[in-house]
Structures are given as C-alpha cells and as structure tokens.
Amino acid sequence: MAKKVLRIVSAVFILAGLAVAAYPLGLRVQAYLEQRRLEHDFRDHVNAPAPQQPGTSPPQAQEPWEEPVWESLPPTRLEIPALGLAVQVGTVEDLDIFAQRLTQPPSYYPQSAMPGAVGNVLIAGHRGGPAGYFQNLDKLAPGDNIILVAPGVRYVYEVEDVFVVKPTQVEVAAPTDYPALTLTTCQRRGMAYDALRLVVRAKLAGTARAD
Image (cartoon, rainbow, N blue to C red; front, side):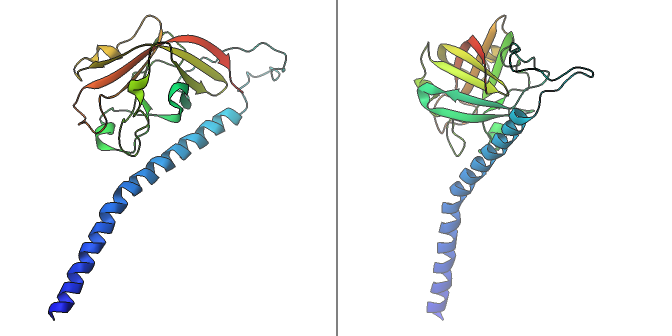
C-alpha cells in the first residue's frame, strides 16, 4: 500500500513539474502566434489595392508617389537595425494590459500620433518575458535609426535620447510640436510593472516609399 501511495505522489510531483516547465513555453507560443497574426494583417493591407475615388482611373506606375495620410493607426512593423529587431506592432485601448498580459506585443498607446505626422508616436513594449522584444532597448544611442514600416511607406526616425523616468512622469507621452517617436519599457528586465521606465525618444529623419 505504501509503495502504491509513493508511486501516486511521485506521479503527481512529476506532472506538476511538467506543468510548471510547460507554462513559459506556452506563453512563448502565444507570443509567437500573436506576431504571426499581426504579420498576416500587415500583408493583407500591403497587398490590398489602393482605394479609388468614383470616376477616377487607377494610378499609373509613372505617377509620383504621395505619402499616405492615416485616419487610424496602420498595421506597422518596427525595425531597429542596431539591435537586429523586426517586430509587428499592435494596438491597445489601455496600457494596463501590459501588466495583465505577458504575451502582449509592442503596441501603440491609445493617444499615439499617426506615424510620420507632427506629434508624438507612442509605442510601449515588454522588456522581459515571452514578448520581451524591447530587452536591449537600453543599448540604443543617439543617431541610431528606428524604422516604422506601414503599408506602402517607411518612416525613418533618428534616436535623440535614451533616458529613465518614474511612472508618474507622464510628460514623456505628451504631444510634441514636431514628428517624434517615443518607445517606453521597464528600466530592467524582470522588474515590476510600477518600476522605473526606460524611454527612447527619436525624431523623424525621412520618409520613403516601401514596396
């Protein structure tokens, strides 16, 4: 009887250990699938024909390119060449989602300006965990490029400053009088959500057509 109980207890501990080990893997799978979903949405927008006004003919290849004017935040890929990072950007209605969801991808703030426009483009992201795409953000330096790729257009921003603020210093998310980009994350990987924030501020350096 004692041996049977011991076997049952051992099996329970083994299953519990497997469950604990599988949990982080499950979160990484969720983060991966979320990226695939955002990539699919991005490709759908890239491949969609440009809307035409009634009675007009489709644009010809030789016509000059015009920069899009966004009415809502477009599907976006964030690229940071200095870090070897390319990640799809989502959107959120409330930044508290980052404290509740470890798999949340980098996402536009609800009050973010549109890419390329005058104002403050705001993107938050995890630094640690299964969606820790901003883990090396502290390695950026003034002059490094941050690129936002939206359907048909690339916005190249140049890093101006990298600094740390308290969570109460919400002025970093305030509107700007020039085309700016602000990335925010935790100061260190694994820190609590209410810890200090690492901020990267960049300015628009150029815009180009994206195929």
